[in-house]
View 1 (cartoon, rainbow, N blue to C red):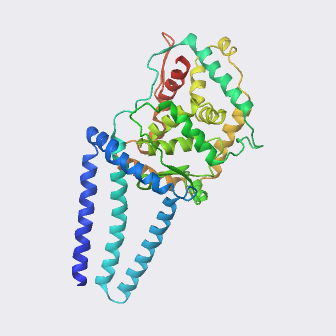
View 2: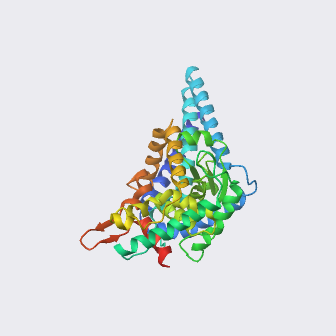
View 3: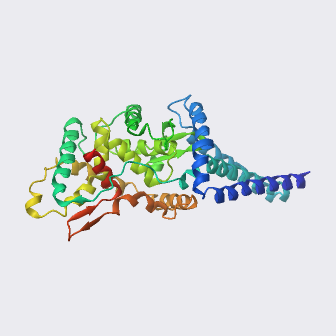
Length: 372
Protein backbone atom coordinates (compact mmCIF):
# COMPACT_ATOMS: atom_id res chain seq x y z
CA UNK A 1 0.00 0.00 0.00
CA UNK A 2 2.83 2.42 0.84
CA UNK A 3 4.48 1.72 -2.50
CA UNK A 4 1.15 2.32 -4.22
CA UNK A 5 0.95 5.72 -2.46
CA UNK A 6 4.38 6.62 -3.84
CA UNK A 7 3.27 5.66 -7.35
CA UNK A 8 -0.02 7.56 -7.02
CA UNK A 9 1.68 10.72 -5.76
CA UNK A 10 4.38 10.46 -8.44
CA UNK A 11 1.69 10.31 -11.12
CA UNK A 12 -0.01 13.37 -9.62
CA UNK A 13 3.31 15.24 -9.63
CA UNK A 14 3.85 14.25 -13.26
CA UNK A 15 0.39 15.64 -14.15
CA UNK A 16 1.10 18.91 -12.35
CA UNK A 17 4.44 19.22 -14.15
CA UNK A 18 2.72 18.48 -17.45
CA UNK A 19 0.19 21.25 -16.80
CA UNK A 20 2.95 23.72 -15.90
CA UNK A 21 5.07 22.85 -18.95
CA UNK A 22 2.11 22.85 -21.34
CA UNK A 23 0.94 26.18 -19.97
CA UNK A 24 4.46 27.62 -20.25
CA UNK A 25 4.34 26.84 -23.97
CA UNK A 26 0.73 27.93 -24.59
CA UNK A 27 1.00 31.26 -22.78
CA UNK A 28 3.75 32.49 -25.13
CA UNK A 29 1.18 32.78 -27.94
CA UNK A 30 -0.14 36.35 -27.86
CA UNK A 31 -3.65 35.39 -28.98
CA UNK A 32 -3.90 32.59 -26.42
CA UNK A 33 -2.53 34.89 -23.71
CA UNK A 34 -5.01 37.63 -24.58
CA UNK A 35 -7.95 35.25 -24.78
CA UNK A 36 -7.22 33.47 -21.50
CA UNK A 37 -6.53 36.75 -19.68
CA UNK A 38 -9.80 38.31 -20.82
CA UNK A 39 -11.93 35.25 -20.06
CA UNK A 40 -10.70 32.60 -17.61
CA UNK A 41 -8.28 34.77 -15.60
CA UNK A 42 -10.68 37.72 -15.55
CA UNK A 43 -13.65 35.64 -14.36
CA UNK A 44 -11.54 33.80 -11.80
CA UNK A 45 -10.16 37.06 -10.38
CA UNK A 46 -13.57 38.70 -10.20
CA UNK A 47 -15.03 35.76 -8.28
CA UNK A 48 -12.10 35.48 -5.86
CA UNK A 49 -12.13 39.24 -5.19
CA UNK A 50 -15.54 38.83 -3.55
CA UNK A 51 -14.23 36.04 -1.33
CA UNK A 52 -11.04 37.80 -0.22
CA UNK A 53 -13.03 40.98 0.42
CA UNK A 54 -15.05 39.45 3.25
CA UNK A 55 -12.38 40.45 5.81
CA UNK A 56 -10.96 43.75 4.46
CA UNK A 57 -7.95 44.26 6.73
CA UNK A 58 -6.60 40.70 6.69
CA UNK A 59 -4.21 39.45 4.03
CA UNK A 60 -5.20 35.92 3.09
CA UNK A 61 -2.01 35.84 1.03
CA UNK A 62 0.14 36.19 4.15
CA UNK A 63 -1.94 33.60 5.97
CA UNK A 64 -1.54 31.18 3.07
CA UNK A 65 2.22 31.80 2.81
CA UNK A 66 2.72 31.22 6.55
CA UNK A 67 0.56 28.08 6.44
CA UNK A 68 2.50 26.70 3.48
CA UNK A 69 5.83 27.50 5.13
CA UNK A 70 4.91 25.67 8.35
CA UNK A 71 3.36 22.79 6.39
CA UNK A 72 6.56 22.30 4.38
CA UNK A 73 8.74 22.52 7.50
CA UNK A 74 6.45 20.04 9.27
CA UNK A 75 6.65 17.57 6.36
CA UNK A 76 10.44 17.93 6.18
CA UNK A 77 10.71 17.14 9.90
CA UNK A 78 8.49 14.09 9.45
CA UNK A 79 10.53 12.93 6.47
CA UNK A 80 13.77 13.23 8.44
CA UNK A 81 12.21 11.29 11.31
CA UNK A 82 11.10 8.52 8.95
CA UNK A 83 14.55 8.29 7.39
CA UNK A 84 16.16 8.05 10.82
CA UNK A 85 13.73 5.28 11.77
CA UNK A 86 14.60 3.42 8.56
CA UNK A 87 11.18 4.00 6.97
CA UNK A 88 12.29 5.19 3.53
CA UNK A 89 8.95 4.72 1.76
CA UNK A 90 7.15 6.88 4.34
CA UNK A 91 9.90 9.48 4.10
CA UNK A 92 9.65 9.55 0.31
CA UNK A 93 5.88 10.00 0.61
CA UNK A 94 6.44 13.10 2.77
CA UNK A 95 8.88 14.55 0.24
CA UNK A 96 6.40 13.85 -2.56
CA UNK A 97 3.73 15.67 -0.53
CA UNK A 98 6.01 18.72 -0.40
CA UNK A 99 6.48 18.57 -4.17
CA UNK A 100 2.70 18.33 -4.68
CA UNK A 101 2.03 21.36 -2.46
CA UNK A 102 4.66 23.50 -4.20
CA UNK A 103 3.66 22.46 -7.73
CA UNK A 104 -0.06 22.93 -7.00
CA UNK A 105 0.58 26.52 -5.90
CA UNK A 106 2.80 27.17 -8.92
CA UNK A 107 0.24 25.70 -11.33
CA UNK A 108 -2.64 27.68 -9.79
CA UNK A 109 -0.67 30.91 -9.90
CA UNK A 110 0.52 30.35 -13.45
CA UNK A 111 -2.92 29.58 -14.85
CA UNK A 112 -4.61 32.42 -12.95
CA UNK A 113 -2.42 35.25 -14.20
CA UNK A 114 0.86 34.47 -15.99
CA UNK A 115 -0.63 34.54 -19.49
CA UNK A 116 -0.99 38.29 -18.99
CA UNK A 117 2.80 38.66 -19.26
CA UNK A 118 2.45 37.84 -22.95
CA UNK A 119 -0.52 40.05 -23.79
CA UNK A 120 -0.61 42.67 -26.51
CA UNK A 121 1.00 46.06 -25.88
CA UNK A 122 -0.84 48.04 -23.21
CA UNK A 123 -2.89 50.74 -25.01
CA UNK A 124 -2.30 53.87 -22.93
CA UNK A 125 -2.61 57.11 -24.94
CA UNK A 126 1.13 57.66 -25.37
CA UNK A 127 2.00 60.94 -27.11
CA UNK A 128 3.55 59.89 -30.42
CA UNK A 129 4.99 63.15 -31.83
CA UNK A 130 8.48 64.57 -31.40
CA UNK A 131 8.71 67.65 -29.16
CA UNK A 132 10.34 70.75 -30.55
CA UNK A 133 12.89 72.60 -28.45
CA UNK A 134 10.75 75.74 -28.08
CA UNK A 135 8.12 73.67 -26.24
CA UNK A 136 10.45 72.53 -23.48
CA UNK A 137 10.03 75.56 -21.22
CA UNK A 138 6.19 75.78 -21.35
CA UNK A 139 5.85 72.01 -20.82
CA UNK A 140 8.26 71.99 -17.88
CA UNK A 141 6.63 75.04 -16.30
CA UNK A 142 3.14 73.58 -16.65
CA UNK A 143 4.07 70.58 -14.55
CA UNK A 144 6.41 72.48 -12.20
CA UNK A 145 3.54 74.83 -11.33
CA UNK A 146 1.29 71.87 -10.61
CA UNK A 147 4.02 70.22 -8.55
CA UNK A 148 4.35 73.38 -6.44
CA UNK A 149 0.56 73.47 -6.04
CA UNK A 150 0.64 69.87 -4.79
CA UNK A 151 3.33 70.77 -2.25
CA UNK A 152 1.25 73.70 -1.02
CA UNK A 153 -1.75 71.40 -0.55
CA UNK A 154 0.13 68.72 1.41
CA UNK A 155 1.66 68.39 4.86
CA UNK A 156 5.14 66.98 5.35
CA UNK A 157 7.13 65.25 8.05
CA UNK A 158 10.34 66.83 9.29
CA UNK A 159 12.35 64.22 7.35
CA UNK A 160 10.77 65.32 4.06
CA UNK A 161 8.22 62.53 3.61
CA UNK A 162 4.53 63.26 3.10
CA UNK A 163 2.53 62.98 6.31
CA UNK A 164 0.86 59.63 6.73
CA UNK A 165 -2.52 58.99 5.06
CA UNK A 166 -4.81 56.09 5.91
CA UNK A 167 -4.39 53.20 3.50
CA UNK A 168 -8.16 52.92 2.99
CA UNK A 169 -8.28 56.57 1.90
CA UNK A 170 -5.37 56.10 -0.49
CA UNK A 171 -7.00 53.01 -2.02
CA UNK A 172 -10.28 54.90 -2.46
CA UNK A 173 -8.53 57.80 -4.21
CA UNK A 174 -6.47 55.50 -6.45
CA UNK A 175 -9.54 53.52 -7.49
CA UNK A 176 -11.33 56.76 -8.31
CA UNK A 177 -8.30 57.92 -10.31
CA UNK A 178 -8.52 54.73 -12.38
CA UNK A 179 -11.60 56.29 -14.00
CA UNK A 180 -9.15 57.81 -16.51
CA UNK A 181 -8.98 54.35 -18.17
CA UNK A 182 -12.48 53.10 -17.30
CA UNK A 183 -13.59 52.88 -20.96
CA UNK A 184 -10.51 50.92 -22.03
CA UNK A 185 -11.52 47.25 -22.53
CA UNK A 186 -7.90 46.12 -22.14
CA UNK A 187 -8.29 46.46 -18.36
CA UNK A 188 -10.62 44.41 -16.18
CA UNK A 189 -13.75 46.16 -14.98
CA UNK A 190 -13.07 45.11 -11.37
CA UNK A 191 -10.34 45.56 -8.77
CA UNK A 192 -8.68 43.09 -6.48
CA UNK A 193 -8.68 43.79 -2.76
CA UNK A 194 -5.87 45.88 -1.29
CA UNK A 195 -4.52 44.47 1.98
CA UNK A 196 -1.85 45.82 4.35
CA UNK A 197 1.01 43.41 5.04
CA UNK A 198 1.79 42.48 8.65
CA UNK A 199 5.16 41.25 7.41
CA UNK A 200 6.01 44.65 5.89
CA UNK A 201 9.20 44.87 7.98
CA UNK A 202 10.54 41.78 6.18
CA UNK A 203 9.52 42.96 2.71
CA UNK A 204 11.06 46.37 3.41
CA UNK A 205 14.47 44.72 3.88
CA UNK A 206 13.83 42.72 0.69
CA UNK A 207 13.22 46.07 -1.09
CA UNK A 208 9.73 44.92 -2.07
CA UNK A 209 6.92 47.48 -1.81
CA UNK A 210 4.01 45.22 -2.70
CA UNK A 211 2.98 41.70 -3.66
CA UNK A 212 -0.04 40.74 -5.75
CA UNK A 213 -1.18 37.15 -5.43
CA UNK A 214 -3.77 36.68 -8.14
CA UNK A 215 -4.97 33.22 -7.02
CA UNK A 216 -6.53 35.13 -4.09
CA UNK A 217 -7.17 38.35 -6.06
CA UNK A 218 -5.22 40.33 -3.47
CA UNK A 219 -2.96 43.35 -3.88
CA UNK A 220 -0.78 43.38 -0.77
CA UNK A 221 0.91 46.65 0.16
CA UNK A 222 4.07 47.12 2.20
CA UNK A 223 2.90 49.73 4.72
CA UNK A 224 6.54 50.54 5.55
CA UNK A 225 7.01 51.99 2.08
CA UNK A 226 7.63 55.74 2.14
CA UNK A 227 4.36 57.69 2.40
CA UNK A 228 5.25 59.60 -0.76
CA UNK A 229 5.36 56.38 -2.77
CA UNK A 230 2.43 54.37 -1.36
CA UNK A 231 -0.12 55.73 -3.90
CA UNK A 232 2.08 54.47 -6.75
CA UNK A 233 2.50 51.12 -5.01
CA UNK A 234 -1.28 50.80 -4.61
CA UNK A 235 -1.78 51.76 -8.26
CA UNK A 236 0.88 49.27 -9.39
CA UNK A 237 -0.52 46.34 -7.40
CA UNK A 238 -4.09 47.14 -8.48
CA UNK A 239 -2.87 47.14 -12.09
CA UNK A 240 -1.87 43.50 -11.62
CA UNK A 241 -5.42 42.69 -10.50
CA UNK A 242 -6.77 44.40 -13.62
CA UNK A 243 -4.97 42.13 -16.10
CA UNK A 244 -1.65 44.00 -16.31
CA UNK A 245 1.25 41.77 -15.25
CA UNK A 246 4.35 43.14 -16.99
CA UNK A 247 6.08 45.19 -14.31
CA UNK A 248 6.85 48.33 -16.28
CA UNK A 249 3.33 48.28 -17.73
CA UNK A 250 1.99 48.25 -14.17
CA UNK A 251 4.37 51.11 -13.30
CA UNK A 252 3.28 53.12 -16.33
CA UNK A 253 -0.40 52.58 -15.61
CA UNK A 254 0.00 53.53 -11.95
CA UNK A 255 1.97 56.64 -12.92
CA UNK A 256 -0.59 57.66 -15.56
CA UNK A 257 -3.49 57.15 -13.16
CA UNK A 258 -1.84 59.14 -10.36
CA UNK A 259 -0.63 61.94 -12.67
CA UNK A 260 -4.18 62.49 -13.92
CA UNK A 261 -5.79 62.30 -10.50
CA UNK A 262 -7.55 65.24 -8.86
CA UNK A 263 -5.72 64.35 -5.64
CA UNK A 264 -2.59 66.45 -4.95
CA UNK A 265 -1.20 63.52 -2.96
CA UNK A 266 -1.47 61.10 -5.88
CA UNK A 267 -0.02 63.62 -8.33
CA UNK A 268 2.84 64.34 -5.94
CA UNK A 269 3.61 60.62 -5.82
CA UNK A 270 3.73 60.59 -9.62
CA UNK A 271 6.06 63.60 -9.69
CA UNK A 272 8.29 62.10 -7.00
CA UNK A 273 8.81 59.04 -9.18
CA UNK A 274 9.24 60.61 -12.61
CA UNK A 275 9.61 64.40 -12.56
CA UNK A 276 13.22 63.59 -13.43
CA UNK A 277 11.97 62.81 -16.94
CA UNK A 278 11.07 66.49 -17.35
CA UNK A 279 14.38 67.55 -15.78
CA UNK A 280 16.17 65.48 -18.43
CA UNK A 281 14.24 67.36 -21.11
CA UNK A 282 15.12 70.70 -19.50
CA UNK A 283 18.80 69.74 -19.39
CA UNK A 284 18.93 70.31 -23.18
CA UNK A 285 17.97 73.97 -22.76
CA UNK A 286 20.55 76.73 -23.15
CA UNK A 287 21.55 78.68 -20.04
CA UNK A 288 19.44 81.72 -20.90
CA UNK A 289 16.43 79.44 -21.49
CA UNK A 290 16.90 77.71 -18.15
CA UNK A 291 16.42 81.06 -16.42
CA UNK A 292 12.80 80.94 -17.66
CA UNK A 293 12.02 77.73 -15.79
CA UNK A 294 9.72 77.79 -12.79
CA UNK A 295 11.65 77.13 -9.58
CA UNK A 296 10.38 74.01 -7.83
CA UNK A 297 9.81 74.23 -4.08
CA UNK A 298 12.87 72.86 -2.25
CA UNK A 299 10.53 70.52 -0.33
CA UNK A 300 10.45 68.32 -3.43
CA UNK A 301 14.15 67.53 -3.35
CA UNK A 302 13.90 66.97 0.39
CA UNK A 303 11.28 64.29 -0.29
CA UNK A 304 13.31 62.66 -3.05
CA UNK A 305 16.45 62.63 -0.94
CA UNK A 306 14.53 61.06 1.94
CA UNK A 307 13.18 58.29 -0.32
CA UNK A 308 16.67 57.56 -1.69
CA UNK A 309 18.26 57.47 1.79
CA UNK A 310 15.40 55.44 3.26
CA UNK A 311 15.86 52.58 0.81
CA UNK A 312 19.64 52.71 1.14
CA UNK A 313 19.19 52.21 4.88
CA UNK A 314 16.71 49.34 4.50
CA UNK A 315 18.58 46.98 2.20
CA UNK A 316 19.47 44.06 4.45
CA UNK A 317 18.01 41.46 2.07
CA UNK A 318 17.84 43.54 -1.09
CA UNK A 319 20.02 41.22 -3.17
CA UNK A 320 17.95 38.22 -2.06
CA UNK A 321 14.69 39.95 -2.97
CA UNK A 322 16.07 41.06 -6.34
CA UNK A 323 17.39 37.58 -7.13
CA UNK A 324 14.05 35.82 -6.60
CA UNK A 325 12.02 38.62 -8.19
CA UNK A 326 14.33 38.58 -11.22
CA UNK A 327 14.05 34.80 -11.46
CA UNK A 328 10.26 34.92 -11.26
CA UNK A 329 9.88 37.67 -13.88
CA UNK A 330 12.22 35.92 -16.33
CA UNK A 331 10.39 32.62 -15.81
CA UNK A 332 7.16 34.43 -16.72
CA UNK A 333 8.55 35.28 -20.16
CA UNK A 334 10.04 38.75 -19.63
CA UNK A 335 13.69 38.35 -20.64
CA UNK A 336 14.77 41.66 -19.04
CA UNK A 337 13.79 40.43 -15.57
CA UNK A 338 13.81 43.16 -12.92
CA UNK A 339 15.43 45.52 -15.45
CA UNK A 340 11.96 45.68 -17.02
CA UNK A 341 10.86 47.98 -14.18
CA UNK A 342 12.75 50.90 -15.72
CA UNK A 343 12.49 50.25 -19.46
CA UNK A 344 10.23 53.25 -20.04
CA UNK A 345 12.62 55.85 -18.58
CA UNK A 346 15.64 55.52 -20.86
CA UNK A 347 14.13 55.19 -24.34
CA UNK A 348 14.29 58.87 -25.35
CA UNK A 349 16.46 60.57 -27.96
CA UNK A 350 17.43 64.20 -28.47
CA UNK A 351 18.52 65.27 -31.93
CA UNK A 352 20.89 68.26 -31.58
CA UNK A 353 20.81 69.09 -35.27
CA UNK A 354 17.06 69.77 -35.41
CA UNK A 355 16.62 70.27 -31.63
CA UNK A 356 13.81 67.74 -31.26
CA UNK A 357 13.08 65.26 -28.51
CA UNK A 358 11.72 61.81 -29.26
CA UNK A 359 10.11 61.14 -25.89
CA UNK A 360 10.63 58.23 -23.54
CA UNK A 361 7.58 56.26 -22.49
CA UNK A 362 7.12 58.29 -19.31
CA UNK A 363 7.79 61.59 -21.05
CA UNK A 364 5.10 60.68 -23.58
CA UNK A 365 2.61 60.22 -20.72
CA UNK A 366 3.48 63.68 -19.41
CA UNK A 367 3.09 65.13 -22.89
CA UNK A 368 -0.24 63.38 -23.44
CA UNK A 369 -1.65 65.23 -20.45
CA UNK A 370 -0.11 68.53 -21.54
CA UNK A 371 -1.44 68.41 -25.10
CA UNK A 372 -4.81 66.79 -24.31
